[in-house]
Amino acid sequence: PPRTRAFGRPKTLHASAVAPTRTAPPGPPRTRAFVSFLRTRQLKKLERAADAAPADGEANMAFVKALAREHPEAALRRIEAMAPATQAALLEPLTREYFKALVATGRIESMALDDVRRRLFAATGAAATGAAAA
Image 1 (tube, rainbow, N blue to C red):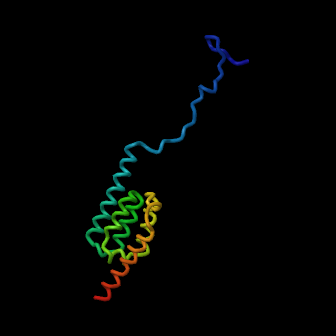
Image 2: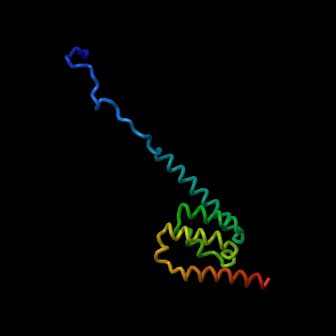
Image 3: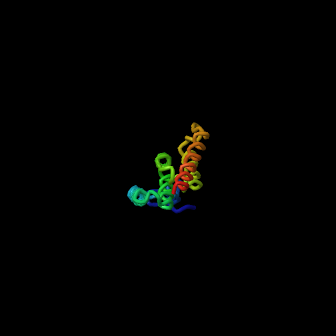
């Protein structure tokens, strides 16, 4: 028989007395805030590098890719604001990032793809004209 305590109840554990197992939370708010701070700091660093050298395709693409991961709407605005020569120089990877950002923001459904095609061809035409003039 179960042992009894001094006050007469059996010494058995009830299921509710056992501590439930819990998974660890994703992290304290301070950790998430710090990670967010680091991401923002990295984005600002990439933006400064891209702004300092607008003709540098690698710097611009690094910034657009990082920006698209965190803020796809801002990445769309950045791509649309680029000079046509820069757009033409980065046509393939920039187009890929542009479409990713359109999908992420949900604007792919409302965007006229003929307009996108016209913009891309205008960018390549501007680059070809600029190269022919040089």
